[in-house]
Each structure stands twice: as C-alpha cells, then as structure tokens.
Image (tube, rainbow, N blue to C red; front, side):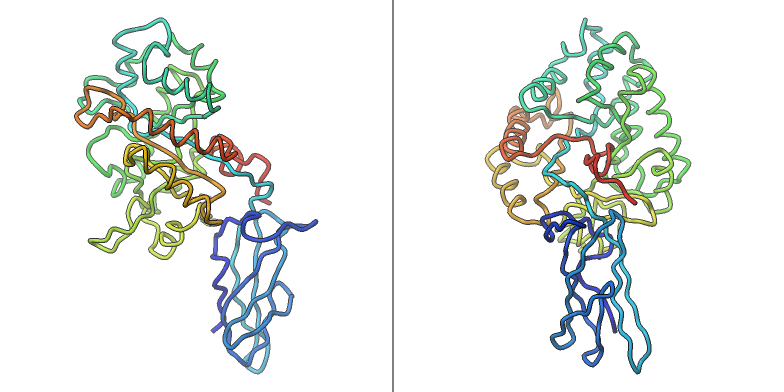
Length: 366
C-alpha cells in the first residue's frame, strides 16, 4: 500500500497551506507506505515514522503533480495526485443572489425611469457604493406564478445595465423556481435548452457584457453526465453546500459529487475536478438562513481555519426582500450588511468567480 493522504487530490493550495519560497509554495506531503520501504516524493526522500511518511515539496506551477514513489524488492510503486496552486491568492469574496424574477416583473410592469427606482436594485447599489460589493443575480426564465417571463422585459434599460457591469451581472439559474431540483435528473438537452433560452434573453435586454456564466444551479444538483453542457458554455465554478443530511447520511446540494469529495468540500474552500474542467466551491453563508447576530460569529470561525479562510462564498435569495412574499424577512438587508461590513473590515476583496481563478485573475493554470 502506498498512498498520499494530504494534500487531497484536487486540493486548491495557497499560502495558508504552506510557505512561499522564491520558486513556489512549499507544502508538506503526508501519506502511508509499507514500513520497510524508502519513500520519495517528487524526488525528495521522505521522513518515516512507522507506516507514515512525510516530505516537504515545492509546488511551482499552478497545475502540479505530486508523485510518491517506493522502490525495492517489491518493485516500483507510485501514487500520483494533482493539486492547484492559487498563485498570488488574496482574501476575497463573491456574492451571488439566487431565485431572481420578482424584480424583473416589477420593473417590467412599472417601467420606471431607472432600474434603481426598484427598491431591490437600489439596496444592492447602496452596498456596492459602501463596500464595493459585486453581485451576480441568478435568474429564472419566469416567475413562480408564471405571470411574467424574460421575453417580456424591455430593452430600454440596456444602457443602464452596461453602465453598471463592473459590479452587477445577470446569470442563468433555472427555468422556474418549481419544480424543486429541476436538474437533478434532467437530461443534457433540457439543461442546455433552459440555459440557452435564459442567456439569450439576458443578452437581448441587458447586453452581452452584463451576462455572467453561472456559478450555481437551482438546488445545486446535476449529474456528472450533464456537466459538459455547463463547461461548454463557459462555466468553470460550481458553488454548493456539500452538506451531509443527518437523516439520510447523504450529501446534498453537491452536484452529486461523491461522498469522499463532498466531505472534503464541507471542510475546505474549494476543490478542482481536473477531468471535468470545474472547480467546486463551498458556500459559506446563506444570509436568509441566519439571524443577524449569528452572521459575524460564523464568518469569524471560518476565518480562523486556514482551509476555509481565504475565500468567502456568500449568497442569499431574492424573494426574502419582498414584503408580499409569504416568508418575507424584514431585516434581510441588515443580514447582508452585517456580512458585507465584516468581510470588508477584514480585508476581503469583492470578485466575480468567473474572472480568473475564483476571482484571482493572476492565477492561471499551466
């Protein structure tokens, strides 16, 4: 038996996981091997303690392989993994808002002079002005009541959308809020058609520059067989909860990623799937699910763990802003303010995940 235990295959590594050197990031590789075998890791002799070994190696390239090797009477054995070095990484956060349709219906019906005469967009603009926050609004094709669809939205605001593309983007989420879990068992054809129809309408009424590849599907579930539909359309990041349900013991809102990787993501910021061409990101906070007083303590706990401290994946849902919604949250905006104020004060920078690597435009795979 020869196995590398850490780093995990697909791990995203930054300076919190090792030490920067003139040539790269020095990280400690740990694993297990037969006790009588000498082990080398990327050509460096490993230290042994019983069946365990460890060695410090320097990761230079963004996309790097780590190889543990034994040679002896049993022949040569190897275990290879790949990791991603997030070069020039910095503390950053993204903010996505899911389930959008009400604000588009409201604007379409009232035809105000400005998009920001809609109180919802005005709130978001206020956060951008105070904290520099960048928002991606994930859009349904139609409202839950099916009394509005994107093809009804006028083109008269294209200039205003264009003037705000530095901080406000629109993206695909699903065809409708219902049924739940629309892509958990959907065909590639269904996902592709819904995606293309929503993108086409967004580009029509808001312009190409307002469009953003999505980072989360409605309910965060889709089988691996349909992932190429997303990759072919420019998706490089998928955010999910990767949460284990106590009742069933199964992981959920995880794009049907296997249990081992879901467990890893539950405790880490991100994980690469090199074969799929996707990075999975764990959502750290859903503002509509946490009272104001719980938000900062949650973020503080995450910031104390090097595995969850570098990237804050934040989100909420549109409907909780609206007083007519049955589950309206009167202090919803205050919850966002608590989160955004804290990440700003701690030095986290706002990013779009689709730009560069998880918002780091200086970290490119080689």
